[in-house]
Image (cartoon, rainbow, N blue to C red; front, top):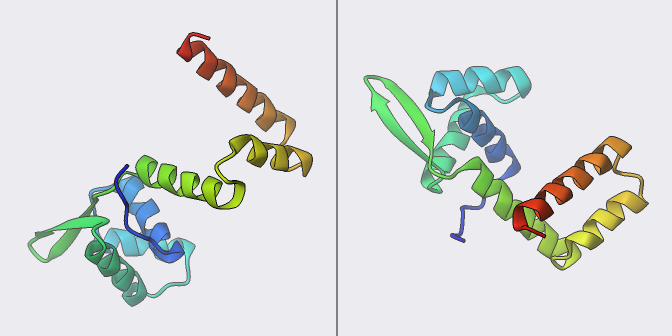
Length: 128
């Protein structure tokens, strides 16, 4: 697994927009983020520049407009972050994590049913 860049919470919000709408230009990113945040356009541009510097985004200049594309996949990034969370807080033991959520009533019956289905599907796919 390759090491992905460290992305702050604010940068992650920018990445979510880009992952969903790529390729996307600066004005479109700014328009979408000003609807859901209180950030100024200057702040958004700074976050975009940081993501380019970190190697999370590439851009192409089309006349006077910059168009951005992610260099890391959302699924890959979330997978690495999920794994790091599991290692840090539960010593890599997913059973301990799920037990904690179930014992604290953090999972609804519907979520538990979904987990059961996912586990059954996983077993079926492995031939067990």
